[in-house]
Amino acid sequence: MRPTWPWSQDQTELGTADFRSIKFNVYEAALLAENGAGLRLHAAGDLHVRPGLAEDEVLFHVLSRCPLGQVVLKPGDELTGQCIVELVRP
Image (cartoon, rainbow, N blue to C red; front, side, top):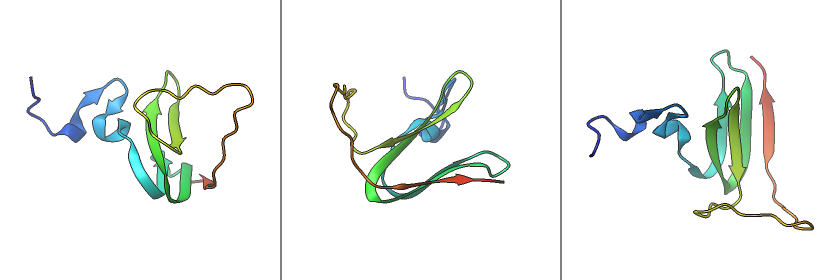
């Protein structure tokens, strides 16, 4: 059954759909607390970000590609890419 509320307000224990969704091809993305502390990512439009909630923490996934399933890394696999992750203080 289709909800009667906007998609962005689809609330679960992991946050709203708007919060949980992947943001594609970002140049800048930030995950900040109410006091302004958090993380800010600067990229060249070639990365994607996805926030999430865990038991006692907030996650900020930076993705270089976004397949539908998990990508399993094997011993010896190397990841490359460039971005700037800034720690933001209140």
